[in-house]
Amino acid sequence: EGPRLQLLELLNQQLLPLRGYRMIIDALLKAGRDQTALDVIARAERHYADSPTLVAYQQEAQRALAAAQAEVVVSLPRAQEQLGESVFFNQLDAAIVAANWSEAADMLRVAQSGKPAWFNARQPDLLSRQMRVAHETGEGSEMVLAARLLLDGSLAKSQLVVDYATALRAQGQTAAALLLLRAVQRKTPALALSRRLLTEWTASVDPATVNP
Image 1 (cartoon, one colour):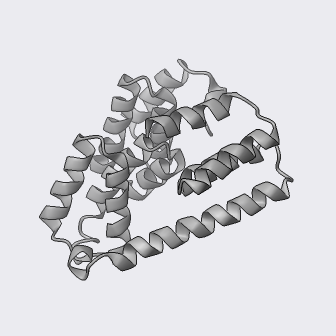
Image 2: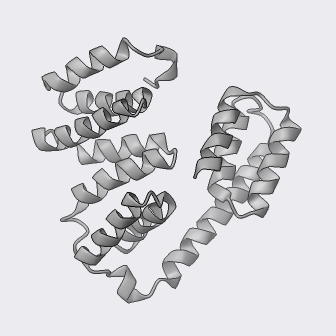
């Protein structure tokens, strides 16, 4: 994931001619890096919103990604779709500890697609892990969505999100941490801890770097 994140960070900071974006997208599509291609297209569209070439690339990448995901789900043996609860979480946690973020993301997608018997009962555990995996794979919007789905107004769930936000802050990821705190505040505005941290951390970053 390191090269992917470095590429996206570079494109966040640097404007390329349309031809430059096309060369990058072509290379990514030929290499089967469809999700990364979509990420690059999204950044190119900020500057070339009316480009029919980018629209065509986007459609091609989306078709390829959908086909690949469908193939993965169809090819899974039924036994793996109904993978035992303890085995699944042991394997998922092992992937997370080893920082195998792509593997962890694939496992979460399989669980969401297959919906094993334990799926509903373990949704909070899945969402808490999805929140972290999404951040580590550079999917900020997916991270926030997982946090919002996890939050149910209870102190326990709010504390889970605040704890992860605090960990991100300690790693210097203040912008991502603020996104999570804002999700907590929207759901539980009376929570004093998240309100205090939100005030303190917001003062330490450039507001332009944090999505509303």
